[in-house]
Amino acid sequence: MNVFLTGASGYIGRAVARRLVAAGHRVTALTRSPGAAAAAQEVGAIPFVGEMGEPVSWQAMAWSHDAAVHIAQEHSSDGPAKDALAIETFIKASMVGRSRALIYTSGVWVLGNTPDAPADERASTVGAAQVSAWRSYHETLVLRARSDQLRTVVLRPGIVYGGRGGLVDLFFETARDEGAAAFIGDGSNRWSLVHLEDLAELYVLLLEGQASGVYHAVDSAPMTVRNIATACSQAAGAHGSVRSVPLAEARSSMGAMADALVMDQAVTAPASAALGWSPSRPTFDAAGAFLQWSH
Image (cartoon, rainbow, N blue to C red; front, side, top):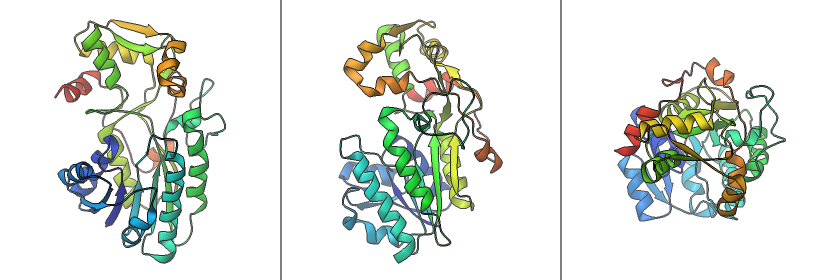
């Protein structure tokens, strides 16, 4: 299959590109710099220079592909608007081009806090984290675009770990550099995790199948942040030492991101399981993650 991919030089995108190429697909990666192009080539993708927020620079190329996998996210005030433009362009691909599938990357933060019961793919997004609230509407754009010509998928990864680039890296870094893994708040809130390679496998499964709708990518064991930090500290040689950063202090440097990191989330993935997806790492592997991170 010919796949048009955004975000191929990023943390998740590189793993997905590598896995798609390994599965025999031809991947064209939207890139906007020589460095990003080189990163895409390293994992077997074919770079195509363009700017996500300027679809005229890449829409013809996207429309010539069988499917689109949209992972890129620009962390700026213009990011949501550029994301919407990209979605609109990919939807048009089914009308004027050959594209027949669109996989859109969202995230479990659109679910907000889930203190009462685990949230599956049918859960409401009314309480989405402030930093992700715009994604709920973009998910709707994607899902409503489903037609006889276009299969649409929204994929919501949990907190991704493995290699270098995920949020869990912060625990390893502070444990190594400060002697204690630092987390925000009291650490009693839960995260739902997924290993990077298991996530990449789900992208391939969704691309090669016929599924539409919302799918979660999380392992089977939500953990408190304190326990995650403790495991990372132990793996990093800091003997399980951890320390709490007050939420107010974290907000002063991280803004609304700090509030997202203290959300209590237990998320499940029954729809993904029904497709046959089963994470090879059903629980958090701190030792393995540290080994990957440190090399």
